[in-house]
Image 1 (tube, rainbow, N blue to C red):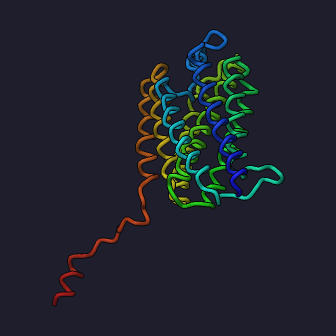
Image 2: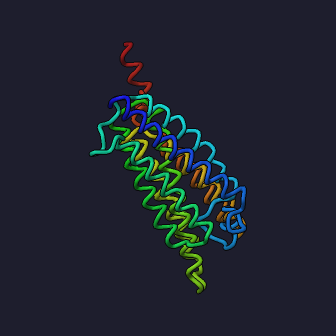
Image 3: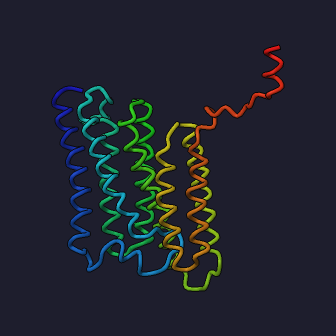
Length: 264
């Protein structure tokens, strides 16, 4: 890319990032529509929803994205132009994800849950695409780990948003279905953590799953202490086992008789 293209891309990436962070903070501080995001979450009990403190991870996500953005604009050879546009694919995808993130936040505060669920799902897909493209370009951890964190957290939010929308739309008593489905989703996430670790040597998804899973367990204790503890145990133990580098663990134990025979 030439210097002019790099300048345009820097503006696009910087403006997109600044808009996402600034609008997120302002919506919360100004209590857009008279409420905070966590207060909306607490209006109904949703099994697949974490305790409020879990959303503090946004600070880490934003800091990680700042690192990624700086590294991207400083690398003048990271991507070709996207058609006639003076920006690369990664910058364009990031800008789209930020735009969708802002739209999702506004819809959430306005309590348009079904549409917000659709928007956050699309945003998650865009973030995953960005992760894959960046991972192919660079093996440097500070290039792809921030995007892994971003995509993983968006995936958790998408699941929570869908569960929230479904809970609000169903008026009949669903019995144990929400609780059972929450356990099922958590188990699937644990398996996904194992695949991410095994196939891509990526532990970030697992860390996000255990962080969110513990929060879901803490929240679930409002309805059932036993279920809450079980969810926490599955999160910690399941993800812990998923992140173990089994391929590097030597499970073969030498027999003392074989050892003795070698020295004879």
